[in-house]
Length: 468
Image (cartoon, rainbow, N blue to C red; front, side, top):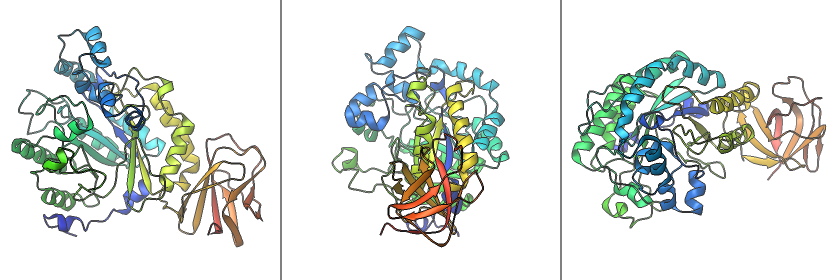
């Protein structure tokens, strides 16, 4: 299908099967902020915003990639750390030579091999974050800072490595914020909307960047952040993308805010600002039930997206938390875009790597219940001993993933009923399991010596919904 350069035309685009099937992507935040690599451990975004509010979040920002904005709080933890470590006269831009030197040792093939091994189907890289520093040799360099780009084509090198491993490559671009154009300190949520760069010169600059990224790298995901200038013609930009990247998808962060919306006079919860998108992107959050629109939860393994040397194992998701969260997301029509924050030289911190490898080991056994599946009639149930259950389906198979390891030789899943054609297997085990229909649900006899995994997935054929 060829799209015309109008919003009416591009809204006819449908989400391709590959994105529904993919389930797991790897997000990579890497840039100048990876050199200082520090932020206070304030907690997850959703928790801090809910408990302390936005002003507290921005002053004590857990996101290490917001280092430049956090520096602007003279009495903030980041400023105190920076002055003690580098001195008060050391500017953010002084990290440029350190980053450019460090990236010469980076091996993109090693990243791609790891991501493929754990089961990821796509990768998304920050081509330009809010600081405005670009990770590719753009023909449209920053007009306000000289040599404000990486001295290596990071985007190109990683794109080639990812595709060599059979995965898809997507690109993040900060289209709303660019602190090289507007350096105003962000103190509250309203400041985020208010500092979106609306200058016509930036509109042309950002659209030119997207065209360049599309032409040069053909990203499978167009992952924008923090809105987009109201003067841009998104119908034209989206049509250009879809026509040049068949099968591409666009996220929901291209909102073009009008002046009343910038002033906060219209609630973002009441008005859909996004003119078009293929998928939703809740951040450090997820939906409570199956969402009719395709969505992608995004978060770091810890509190930050960029590498934060201040994070320890205590701030990172445990193996169990990660697997349970992922299974829940998939059961509700979501993907997980799980972030990795590399060090400046490209080293993936050992505790992040460990979580990825543990996750991949679980997926190697139970991935059949994940990849290529779709939501069932409902997402959740329980066992009679209180373990959570999440459902997915593929073809005639229903998958029930039990969140935890049953302590007895039998597990009963509520709300399921057997038929004369029922067969049940435990993925990774192989043999057909015995079962018995009970008033409380379907009782399944477990294999001997069930390993103590965070979750176990069953394939059920010929089973019907008994929850009505």
